[in-house]
Image 1 (cartoon, one colour):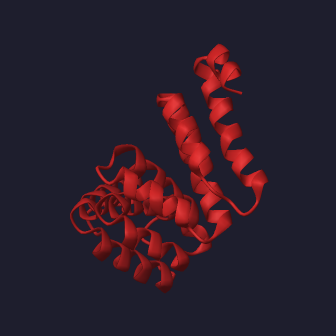
Image 2 (image 1 turned 135 degrees about the vertical axis):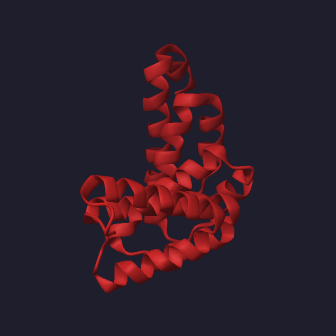
Length: 169
């Protein structure tokens, strides 16, 4: 810290956290939580909170069950990054099918909806038929939540191919 200040320090610390997360996501998550709990953040709150994305992405990619189990312990400020990390991991992980299964089994409907909606929208931009097929398999206690995820697929599909999205509807 003595050698760096401001954005240079923040950028260097972000890179260290990313690399550490790639190697040891559970260790860096534990450290991240210790620092968060202490209240003495090494960077701005918004930048600090966004580090949960990289950490959760790696944790989900390497051990999906552990990442999903950790969701019940995340703080309000970590939610956005954790959800984005899961979405990111689902797109690029060899454990994609396990991640998707765990998401569908998630007992917290609000978390499930938030992650599924983001994942469906991102996926629809890349492969809309796969996204639509996957979204159709989701189960929610509230049917409106399922429709919301399907709607996200349709909206993002329409951006790239409105005719095919319309036919799908």
